[in-house]
Amino acid sequence: MIIALKPGVSKEDINQLIADLEILGVKVDSSQGSSQVVLGLVGDTTVINDDALRANRWVDRVIRVQEPYKRANRMFHPLDTVLEFKSDQKAAKIGGDFFAVIAGPCSVESRQQLVAVAESVKKSGAAFLRGGAFKPRTSPYSFQGMGCEGIDLLVEAKKETGLPIVTELMEISQLELFEDVDMIQVGARNMQNFNLLKELGKSKKPVLLKRGMASTMTELLMAAEYVMAGGNSQIVLCERGIRGFDNFTRNILDLAIIPALKKKTHLPVIVDPSHATGLSWMVPSMSKAAIAAGADGIIVEVHNDPEHALCDGEQSLMPEQFNDLMNVIRKYADIEGKVL
Ligand code: PEP
Ligand code: MN
Image (cartoon, rainbow, N blue to C red; front, side):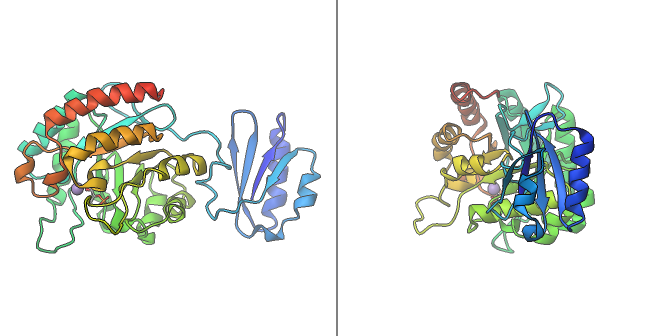
């Protein structure tokens, strides 16, 4: 349930109303919108008498939210959430008017590989460096990532380039290794790992939450709600393709979920055209489509030697191709009124 208060309500009146509601056993979060204060009620709201609430002189509107997610709901938080990260240049931001490009290899493979890719994507204008250290692989015989050593190399690359780093966490026990990681990725395969989500809710780290390959939009938003319910609202949602019946691409890029999510939630939404298509030559067209559909950013795989990549070479752009893509993205982002 959401309660919009009238402009001009005093702090005392807000606190009194919150106290009256909390006596009934619901939890109340208040949020300052551009012109009014909005209260979001979580818990069993069936005990609340809507008519009595509407009679309160400071209550403007009472809305019964159909959706099961509240904190992620745009009705509760009308303004776009913008995440801000420290960077050696200007602060890197995602959401609102800010478009973010996250680029780097699928997996960290060596110091030489990571430094080469990190420097090139930085030069081309990427705002974040990605790279997997712990890799969720379908086969136990495939490269599983460099683990802790991979995290150390990412942190080194961050020191050298100044780019904030994004990498995947698969296991709660590894969270302490992510101290210097700027944004923790929850991969598609872990989108509904509720224990992991709850633990990230307690953390202060921004979370990049990827859509599960067979998850609905509501399930994605409920996964975000898990993290937010724990007190962490720094979340970026990512559409990375879902399973379909055709296999001409690795997954099916669900572009329609971008405007749908932007309508339902205030959280930033980015697109992963690399995992969505599995084909590097499709990445530029799908990146342009993502911007046109209203995305707040893209996450793209880039490798300096895709033919010999230990993971996802076929979908990885060469540094020169990524540079060309950035030149196109700048124009498209400009048309959409986004700041890169
Ligand atoms: C990745 O980003 O490298 C990855 C494994 O992504 P996803 O979880 O979307 O498959
Ligand atoms: Mn990959």
